[in-house]
Length: 436
Image (cartoon, rainbow, N blue to C red):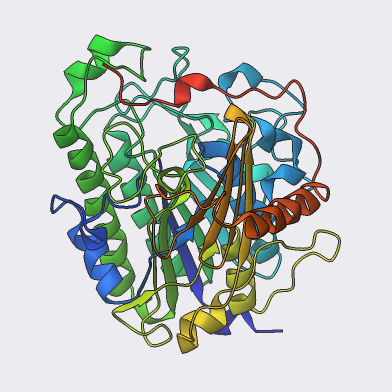
């Protein structure tokens, strides 16, 4: 087992509803992400990275546990809404081992700054699931200025105590993340810091849009406001905060012993530029589940590499545990796979088979190598993503044997997972398509 002083620090940064192609380094149409672009140039950028789900909270269950979210009842909600405030059932059970709890138990300081979205107090919360510090949001969508949710409930916490700090939420998250790094540097203690931004999730508000916050009130998923420019500015505000985090690591002498990872919890939203992908949040089309992913560790991860390794959110639990020299809990075997060897040696991609399901529109998906099986409302599709990542050429009739084999493989996997509870809710309002 590694000594605490030999272990690397981890900073895991997650955007909310950021599409695969929104960053400049992924071909975005506007220069919104200079700090993330630099991070990509100094590390590895993944072209075929996936979220565990095309919607918020299910992906976060997988990120915390390293397991397919379908194993947990709370993750069946698409997503977990404020309806469950006070529920003792719907949330991440405190007794379930998590990435932060496993790292905490070997001497890491663990902190979450930003969005939790895995169940409400008093039964659930970050401090009950392995984090020692928490500043941020217990639920899902939150106004950037009033810090209220869609029911008008104020939802900003410092630990388990409600706090009424004033400011633009993206900047508050960045500032607290910087302070956490500085405090850990003073303690000379290895740390795992989760920075889960709410940006660029609706409501569509930049730093200059406080008046808009008062105009829309509790109608946070408003369709009468926002624009591509607003959305891009929200990404830029987040990027500035990430720049401060990276600068703080350098200033504190922590840069070379800190793994920094950036990704998104799911795919594109209303103003996102998905080209060349199609589909958005709530879809198992590529635009709903393929996400940006950048990893940086000076001296251990080669700079400027683009990886085509297929991977998924839950892989980061296995990856961080291996780098820390920590074994997963034997009673909760991981579904994710470690990316350590690939990131350090930059070997050619290995074959991965990944699975998804959604109650919304009865969606099913399996990716195996270059091929993807997709089923939506009983209609089957077969795509060769190496040739057609836009998912327009359906090979289902052209290659019926492959379709049958992949469909059977999906059915076999599905039998290993709990079924979808009948009372699970799929929130159609979250499927914000291009409305008139």
